[in-house]
Length: 194
Image 1 (cartoon, rainbow, N blue to C red):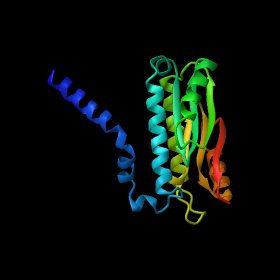
Image 2: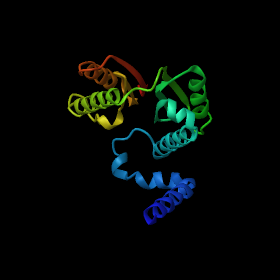
Image 3: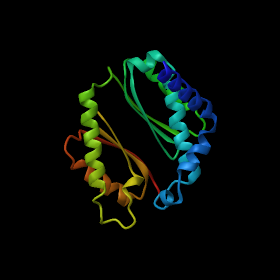
Image 4: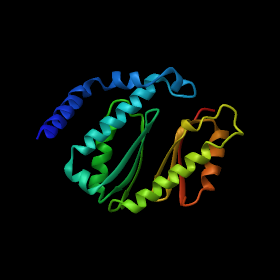
């Protein structure tokens, strides 16, 4: 009983502090982490806020939560929505909830109409993502390239690549991703800076 009370107290404290999430996010961003970051501090804070608010909105709908698998990834105000949902009504509901969040510049709706993927599929996707991230860490041919500038999201073997990149960086990342096992398709959501 005491553990349950403490858990509820902790949860209440967390939810009550939700209004100051921007201050929390800003505190998490160090000068060191900004060295190779191409987004501004404000853009990073806004992206984290959009993701948090999107998940709060989607998780508040029990039917959506139980019947869909949705991943929301934000980079520089661009939102990538991936996963599976059982019908077009749910798909529209998900996108509608996200597009009204302040700071959203663009939405890439990559939701598939299907039953949610199973644990084996998600584990395979996580393995593909990890393999690609390891490969990106091996890039030495591009001066000042930091693999942390590229977000890698995998859903059912389809790899989505996001980030602020130069065209030559994007080409190298795409070609390297193409060589990794298990990749069925690559969809780029890059924002090119040249």
